Image (cartoon, rainbow, N blue to C red; front, side, top):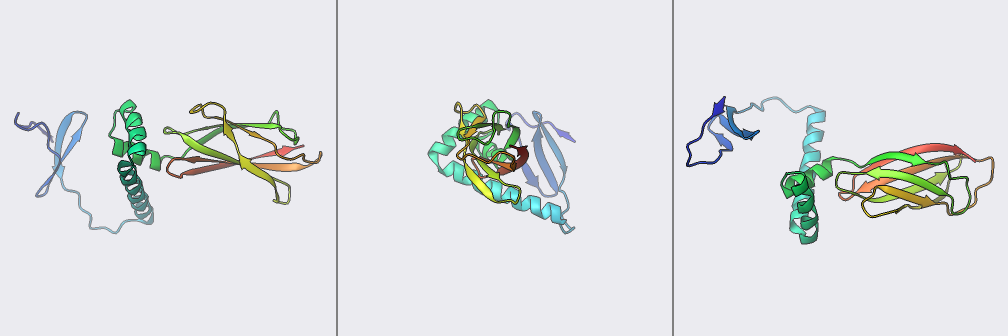
Amino acid sequence: MKVKLNPMFEEARGSLGEVVFRHRDGQTIAGRKPSTAAEPTAGQAAHRERFKQAAGFAKSVMADSSLRALYQVMAESKDMSTFNAAIADFLTLPSIESVGLADYHGGLGDPIHIVATDAFGVVSVQVSILDAAGVTLESGAAVETAAGSGNWTYAGQASIVSGSSLTIQVTATDRPGGLTSTTRNKSI
């Protein structure tokens, strides 16, 4: 049911008795208060816990003036509140869009090109190179080619014997600490 408010009020949100007022698409909508008699499923409980953690992160952002300023700029560009921008960042993991191995031949300084993005920015990309037995041969941080570009490069730190089968593991981390990992195989 749509509600037309008295001009004295700009909007109404919350509940009054068994009626709940919501604001969506510029309109105030009234409805019955939802019942919560059933026990939440495991998935619902996990989602509620994750959202609780996201709200905690957003509160820490609001308490830190430099982080708050950063999220405020992002929030304005997305037409949302700073608090909601921090929650959205927490709930959305970074994405690894590509791992370019064409220029990597196992040599010292050979580059691995990575495209890793996040709506609010990726803060680090880590690369590990493992042999066929799963032993780490080398690992380290990739470097973003230009701030905020999402393009990262890792330079090989060791010379790897020709004929080796490798697993390249890439992990991207965003500001709230969300991790996304992927692996690629490469024969040298």
